[in-house]
Amino acid sequence: MLHQNPNPSLWSGRKSETIEYWHQAAISIKDLKVDETQEYPKVGILGYAGEEGVKRNQGRLGTAEGPNAIRKSLGSLAFHLPETSRIFDYGDVYTENSDLESSHELITDTVFNLLETKHFPILLGGGHDLALAHGRGVYKHLASKNQTLGIINMDAHFDLRPTIDGKGHSGSPFLQLAQENQDAFKYLCLGVQRSVNPKSLFETADKVGAKWMVMEDFRLNNWEVIQEKILWFLDSVDKIYLSIDMDGFSSAFAPGVSAPSPMGFRPEFAFKVFELLSSSKKLISMDVVELNPAFDHDQATARLAARCAEYVARKVLR
Image (tube, rainbow, N blue to C red):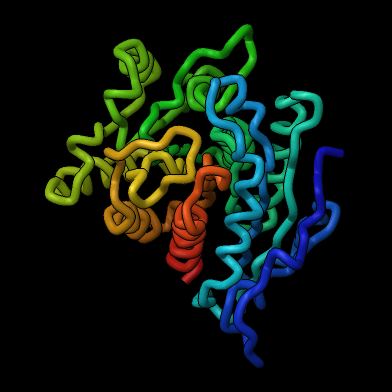
């Protein structure tokens, strides 16, 4: 089985008699035995300790260590979720012998099970190929409910590149989801940088009906236009899956990624978007990907990734 049980020692921080920090609230679950109790709000954390997709896409290796780095930063954060809520850590899915596809199947099944049992899934990457497996799980969950899915990707890249010899990679997940879901594919990419996306990718985005905002427009002084675009997208779907690629942030705040950029968005602006998405009550799942601890400085990127997960969970479950 391509699964590693969670390591409780990763969850550490200040001690207190009551639950005041995430490490005190986190419950490690072995063997992917998903909690089926539905009486309380639940966060389901699943790591993707894989970088085969990054390797296939010729990126910098090291993302396999991302999930544990985020857990360490999450553990020390103050706990402001409802008192009745629970945080379940279901461990990591990993890749063996470059078999990316088997890892994806397990992730898809686990995401589906988490959603079916009323969790709010937070997936920690790992390469952005995670989005293919994650998206498949959300689509599967919504299929029986006859509900539409909108995918919002905060990223410097479209990740709409073609597969290589029929194999997916960290640059292809959303094109694969578009091909699998066709008319049901609703995709909004925020923070796209022209310098790292050739014209062919903009043409692909047009072909699959994607929406986007380039980095030049994705700035605080343009908030009214951005808000209108996001609200329009939210109104067009029933549920939202949010994917946060850490390389979408400026490298001044997120140096530890596979493809750093000095021209990305700032944290305070991204969190303004998180607030808008959470307030819609349509956000049902999220992932944080492409953290590469090998290139991080003072855990700055890991801390930011953890803050993203904590903030969204707090706003969604409140």
